[in-house]
Length: 237
Figure 1 (cartoon, rainbow, N blue to C red):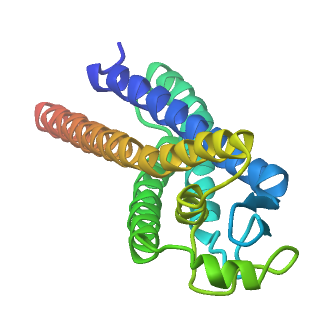
Figure 2 (cartoon, rainbow, N blue to C red):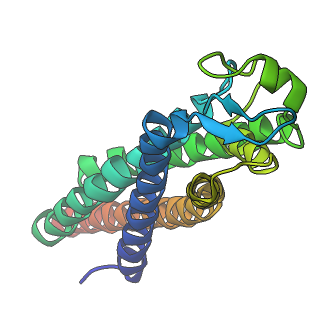
């Protein structure tokens, strides 16, 4: 009979994998936007004449996106898909041999490493975003560096750059709508790391408790077996 914790672990694995898939989809949408419509240029109203702003600044920071995408991919593949395989083998091993499989212990270690990776991605992403937040685009400097030249001042995350672009007097409402929608998606994958972090922590705790429970149970079985062998030897004497 499966441990009650195994049932909760299965649920947690499914939730972690689902959240990882959502995070990957959101980051992929940002990458697609940056590679296409996000390149611009965007027409900005100015006096005496409008100018074209390049869709991306000279100093665009994207490492936090790669880190988050890797974290979500790890959650989906290593923890999710790997977890399904590990749990199936674990249940079979317990039914057949009465003990845990080595694959389950290896996967348990992976849940700890995955949570640490998620923690790193969470801290890194929010720190970088906060450090480049509340910046504005100097419209005079932007006009002097019209497309195809790129805006040269400051470092920007995609989320903060396009938020600042929305503060400019864009002449095309279609551009504004597309940028606004994609900024929301960028915020989405950043904040999606928080539930991934929480779910990963819950899963890690459940797995650790299950490993400790099975090891304690195994020691109890070995202890009873050794006691039984000792009693049998005494009776023979």
